[in-house]
Image (cartoon, rainbow, N blue to C red; front, top):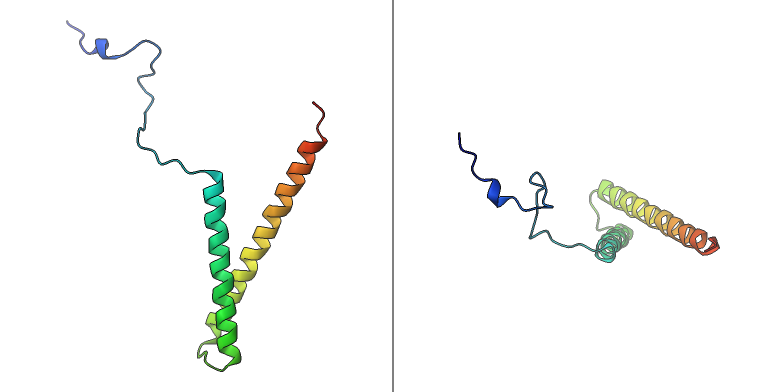
Length: 97
């Protein structure tokens, strides 16, 4: 009985580990910037629909209500994340090294 294929395994290499060579690198700054762009879009859309509603150009008031709630929730989440980030920063600055 002959065992073949063991020569392809290198020392210090895990044969069960998958190595992904073309994994896209996404930074935290890019994710945060994308989220803030989405929040800005939601707020602008709600504002636009509010102006149209004031002018009497909106047929379906449900769209305005939904857009307003989406913008409100997005802003609340953004403020909460900001507050937690500031709180974390302040806690780190209080640490003694």
